[in-house]
Length: 137
Image (cartoon, rainbow, N blue to C red; front, side):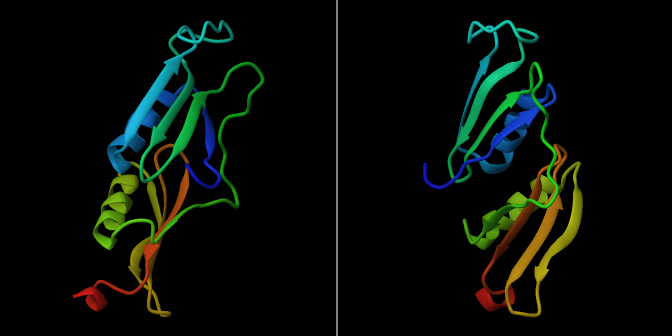
């Protein structure tokens, strides 16, 4: 794994969020409940640690105790040129399901294609690639 990897604290939805991101991005997923980790600081079936490993890497857990849950203001998860244009379009479409498209994935005046979406779990994504679909044919 290279570079920073976000570690996201969810409000009791880490399991479904990690499953969602696994469906979107593929890769491998690991999840350990509080019970698995011998922790007693929350419901035993809550996720104490989970991770998605692949083209996109994420760590996640359910918030417990005095933890604050994820809120993203002034932050975007940028996936610019990280996969083929077809894959990036697929990721954008899947992240949009149940989320809010802020800026559609379209060709921009500077000649590249990008867009923004806030997914159903509140993460803000910037997805794009160099050139346009017409430039790729």
